[in-house]
Structure formats: structure tokens, C-alpha cells
Image (tube, rainbow, N blue to C red):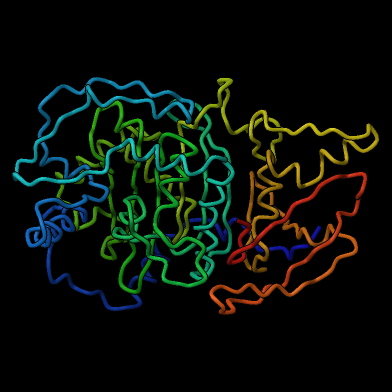
Length: 443
């Protein structure tokens, strides 16, 4: 197994910055004065206004991206909103009829094409494997290495509202400003301009989070030269389905650091009315029942970073949590996916414990081979323990290295060094296959 140089993870590295430290960083550069004021509208409403103007020239419809709760204040429902029970098994949760859902009329008279909440589920079915969804969330943290990220951690936490298990994924990357988190939670946006970034299409967060649980809440803190912001956003399948909404509504609140008083206050992009409307939905549908509890989640974020909490996790067909947190206190396993293999009794245990079999049900095993190389300044932690990278090429005997030169249309695309060999325990351990890494990521 490959060795890893220890990364400094003292508590001070993870602890939130004091008011003074944030204040000093913000005051390093002269404060920019706002040249315009938001009239209490969320960023989606601002975008919608511009899009509506553009749509007037090309047609009467447009695709509305990730509407916020405050935008929905302009929508009037014409029917009651009965509860729509949600099946807790992912592959059955899409069996939903919107016959009793809300019917909405836009008071402005405009016609919109909305993203229906059911798309959250159908979009997430692109992940047939739960670990693949977790990997996509890890990719976001890996992409933040270029912004100074030093760790990503995956852990189990308890939902304070009902004590159920929830999944935490947290990094100390650059975080997101208010507009960036809106692009993250809505559809079809991507801020990743680097050719080395793993994610490019702005869809991974939605597919992966909704594949793991019905609801996700995001806490993010971002610092720029002239300002510091922190935002909270909620993407809740439970909320949308139980309230019978026919569009995706994303409650979101933003805070700005006020250097005069040395603490965060309500962002100037909100009116008090819009802020309270969004906050009310967050407190009703998130695991946290007060604004104080919400803000406490930033205590370990530091000066910048992002915390993702996925809750109301999905169950498997046997009625158990799909993610098994109890089998190994230092791992997350997939319930019931331990593979029994046919082999001679003397070799059965060796074969079953080979990483090629374990990675199918052990997140620690899968994460160890997920990335070909990880910078020495960065580490992945699972349930409090560093994940040691495992280079599969080190498991081979009689290795050979072949320069692969694929061609397309008569043009040479790239030269790739491939490593080929036998597993060290062959022929007693009959394991075969191949792993392909693209942009450092096993695909």
C-alpha cells in the first residue's frame, strides 16, 4: 500500500476564524461602496427578469432555473396542497402522480417552462451505485485544491430533529459566494473553467446529493478581497413533494460580514421580508429548528469552506439504510453488498478481502483507489481517519508498461502509458479487469 506524508490537521486548521481575524482580512482592502441596491429580490428573480426581457424577443417561454422561495411569493396557488407521501426507497420514490399537486398561475401573465421536482429524482437515477454519488461530491472538493483546499472529510452525523443518520461532506476550499451557491443548486451552470477540473457541467451536485438522500442543506463561507459572505441553501425533495409544488423552489439566505460591528449580518441583497420567508422554510424543512442552530454549523467551517449535510437518507429494498454506518466504525458500507466468492477454502478469505472485491461495499476501499495521485498537502478523511491511497499497479507481478497511442479519424489524440500484470496471488485469486483514470479520477 502506498505511503502518505502526514498532513497537518490540528484543530486550529479546522476551527472557525475569530471575528478579529475575519475583520482584519476584510479590512485589508478598502471597502467598495454599493453603486446599486437590490430591491429585496433573490438572485434568481434578478436573472429571471433579464431572461424574461430576452425571451420577449424570441418567444413567450423560458426555462426557469432553480426558483427561490422569495420568487414563489409572486405565484398564487389555486388549489389546496395535500401531503404527498414519499417512499423512502430510492428506486421507488419516483412513483409519484402530480394529479393532486398545486396548480399555479403567474400573476404577471407570463408563461414559464418550469423544472418539475420529479426531475430531481429522475436526474439522480444516473447514479446506479451510491458510492458513485459520493465520489461526485468528493470531486467537488478535489477541484478546490487549486483554491487552497487541504482536506475533505466524510462522516456520519445525527439529524438533531429526529436523531436519524445523516451524511456529512465538508472541505476547506474557497467556498461559494451567494451567486455561486445558486448556480450550484440550480440546473445547467458550471463555474469550473479549469481544464483540469473533474466536474464541468454543473449537474453533479444535484444528481449525487439526491441519489443519497431526499434532502440536502449546504453551508458555505467565502472570502474575497473586499467582502466575506456565508450562505445557506436547501434542496429538499421532501418539501417540494409534500407541498405539491410543480416547480423546484430553493430556500436560501445570505449573510455579509460587517466590519463596523465585527460580525455577520443579513446580506443587503435581501429585504427583511424575503429573508424571513426563506429562513422560515429553512427552519421548517431542515434539520435545524432555529437560526442560532443554523449559524452554529459555521463554527467549524473556518474562514472559507463548504459543508454539505444530506439527510433523510434512502433505504434499500429490505427496509434498511442503504448506507451502513454500523458494520465498521471507521468505514461506510453498502448494506448487503458484501460479495461471497467461490474459491478453495484456503484462499476464500484472501479473495474476499482483496480490494477488487471490497471496493464494491467499502467506501474506504473505494476512496483509496478513486484518485491516481493526491497532493501531499491534501488528504481525504473518512469517519475521522485518513484514507491511505492505494495504487493498484503496486498489486501486480510481472508488470509490463505499454505506450497506448489511440487514434481517431487518422489523428493521434494522446499517448497513454498502460500498466499490465497479474495480481500477486494469482492464480489462486482469480481477479481480472481494468481501471481507467481520466483527469486523475477512476471512471
